[in-house]
Image (cartoon, rainbow, N blue to C red; front, top):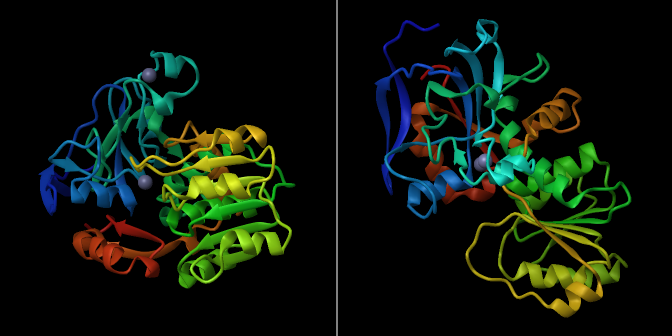
Length: 346
Ligand SMILES: [Zn+2]
Ligand SMILES: [Zn+2]
């Protein structure tokens, strides 16, 4: 346990106002563990919070919901034996009692709280969370990889909603960070072939190819539908990780009958849906939010080497340089995949 009185954390005080704050080290209350954070990942939704266009956040807020470290203190009711455990923290706090929770869907709990959004997050040297959120890591999963369990859990949840079979012809729209976790899971875990990835940026498509994509299509140069038709391909599984409202309409058009379409976006702009196409092909459209207890599964993928977090992580910044890291993500997104903050020396 630390004898330090204060810690550093990343505070968003108001839209466009972010700084390193010095605060008392939090004490774990009943049922909580305190995590000494080692590495934390920056998510697109953190950028939305910074810009003030995140629908749920309240300011001021210590942000960060992708993080891992080691338990250094526990509150009452938590076994002392957990101190020293290396953990990745899932950000989903559910009530356990509402209709969603009782239906086995705690990630859409009616009283849902997300760490780093509704409560103080993991861009801090120390963060207290309910014990159940801290998932033990095996020795084979290193500290940086551990900070990417959360983004991979987004892919795991989406694919558990759509289902995946090795016979699927899969198409992923978007080879940004979210798309890349899906590509790695489809290839490394499920062995899907063919796996097709569509994007507008060659750098991202190169990354998708090295992660195992069998075919990459730059949709600015070649229309997607023509390319698929020319190769006689009709996707049976489509994941939209590019999240433009026009994609759903195209996806439904190019999908094979009985295909599943997974949507990962959070935009408020409606998409056009033809009931004729939907029902003629009997398509399934799947939504997915956060993760439903997927951390153990993703940690196992990492332990077995089925996914490659090192390929996913493009940059690591010392936590003090958080503004620089945000600026890089905004000004040069094609150069970035997952950007981590290092809190070990904060
Ligand atoms: Zn995230
Ligand atoms: Zn609930």
